[in-house]
Amino acid sequence: MDYEPDFDYGDINGPFLGGLAVSEGMLTKEELYSPLFRQLFHNVHVPAFIPVTHELRCRGAALIAPPGAVLSGCSAAAVRGLDFTIARDPVEFIVPESAKFLTRRGLDIRRTKIPGIEAEPWSDLLLASPLRMTMDILTHNKLRRSFPRVVGLLDALLRVKMVDHTALELLVRNRHDHGIRRAREAVALADPRAESIPESELRVLLVQAGFDPEPQLVVYQNGVFLGRLDLAFAEFKLAVEYDGEWHKDGPQPERDARRRAAFRAAGWQFIIVTKEQLYGDPGAIIAAVRSRICPQVLAA
Image (tube, rainbow, N blue to C red; front, side, top):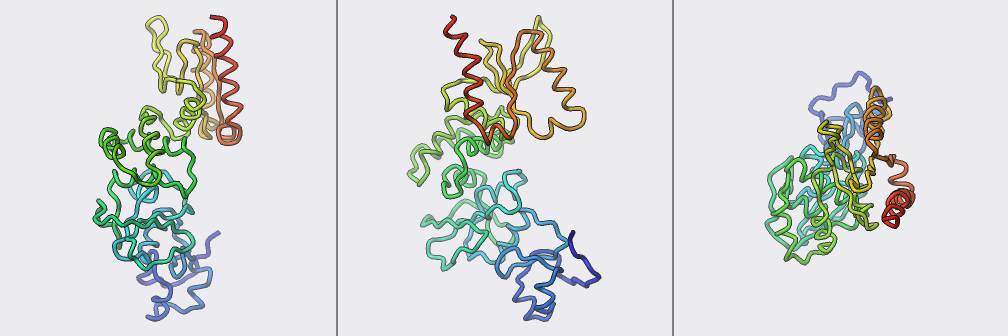
């Protein structure tokens, strides 16, 4: 539980430089390091009653970023309203190669020789354009995002029309950045029809295993609309669907059961994938799909 005693915060209503606040007499050093405040980065603090989000940490990092720094990657996406990060993910910056700035814990710094990165003012620094932000998401290998995850993030950007697929294809075609090969592969596999990032990850997992599922297939039976399927193999009447945590709550389980019962009555089979399976045992998912499809192919 956050500590929020009777304290006059004055102008301190967001991230601030702790050393500056103490030197200007806004608070004492003892108060700075008391439960009244929490530290976001070295010398960057925030009142403890303010919930820590990734966007808040981006604003805090802006206080210590060097001139010309550009917020990019998934951090820029978070500022633009996309749920690509958790609060404690590293804040992603591009800084000029000449900048005398040492990275700090909680920051991910990329240096570039290229001047004039397309960006706009935000907080005390610059915010990468959607196209540049997307390029950084696709090419950045240091944060060890899986390839299916990268495609899932791109699918989400395309789905909300934050970036144009054709413009992105043109951008990656003739560049030679580190990580550009992965970026080209991701752009080639991108499909905005997926309704969630895990659903995209599941699709890419299947594609990498040699399958070709159809995303968000609309199914009719005798002219009657049955519904849409996350991923479908229409030839085999097999659906592969991702059930996230929200499928376990409220009326959703009953809705799922009724919907799938209607499909099963029409001859469809289902493989239901949970979060634990997708991230913990992807091989079992591939095996399950193969066991349903390959016998039918051999029989034919």
